[in-house]
Image (cartoon, rainbow, N blue to C red; front, side, top):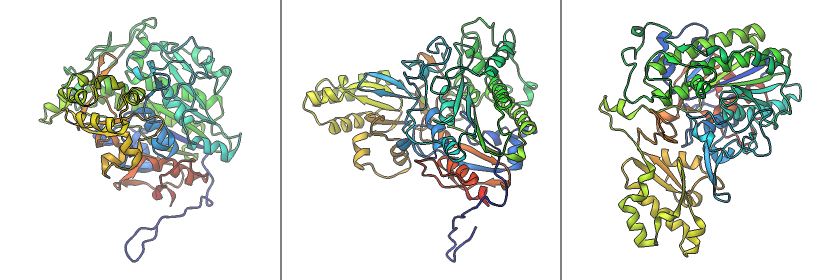
Length: 556
């Protein structure tokens, strides 16, 4: 790296000509891994997992998502594409289709149904966004740009193997991209599935993995603490009143998974470290069966681990369950890395680990520390006095609201036009009343985003990075710090992410592989930098919408 006479650091142009390319790019996404959690529990971490990455590679400790809506599909797709949701189009887990009058689930696709599955995944009680899908079909077609996995397939040709695996469909599909093959766990089926976008039938190894009985092996057992309770930071806080008592799972250890025929059995697996263990086991079978990393053509495998997210929603990030899950994930990673080392060789593998978003603390937990926080019930909004003022101005203002799909409020443009009203004026008037409500920090009309009338600032810029004219709602709502909507389709949860505040944007970036420097970097970097860094490291072009820049420490 060169420094000019004015002390300005100049970018490095790196050529990967002095060594062989990696046989495998292994991109790992840990769902809801807040940036400081690795250090928070570092004293308890074992060998071979997170510690191995930190010892072998570069740890960016101040990495952030730059978009406002820190949800699963948004973060995963940003990591995959190197660009903002304003460009890649995945602005939310759900958006509202005004033409159809229904909510739209991000990766749904009626043209590509599940292969050999019965129908829409119905056993998703902790994942209401997926239940809102109107079809069981899934594909990446709603992602508007290429992904780094697409670029690997384009650059290296048909011999490059590209896969994505996750409990969540959106976690697998977003990372596998358009050119790869995605597998995800169906709670209704109790097995990993894919759609006809990728294949017409399952390869034999998938059926063979099903027959190993990994999913059924947890039946009749329970999630127990890995160590004695006094070894944990939250060892004396097993039963916290704000934790969610999911049916048959309880708020205290041990958490019973139940019998294999219990309708909640597979859901409970995902609410625990078992979900990640099952995902890793399936990914190992895929590596073996598909000969991943077995030749000189660079392959790509994305594995998204979802349990941290589900455990965080149910018990909160500061809970004994979240702490033990982190330790179990560390062991799962250590075992998985050991398998990759045996099959491919870590010396032949570029490992990139990050997260789709962080998470807020539970408001009641924050209250014990004297921090003001709360949860917001959007159902009460149109009963507020401000809407009386709107009715005096516009008529029946309540009728203007078509839908609230967090974080967007969608208005009835046809009705507004019928009354001869200016839509931008109505947006601004409703936004002004929303800003008066306790718990709402910003309400930003899309008309102002489209016209460039929003003042610059951290929050406003992140909302603009989330704005897509065809998919975003009419008003973007940002709740006050430490406030969130806690209702998941009737289930009250302990934590829910989705804000532009630091606890939701801050994630780790850990990169290890051949020639990668070792160290910790405290400079602020952004998740849009991940895909361009992978591209520069292996010599492909960046994804088509990429706006991030390569992390120069990786390329020296």
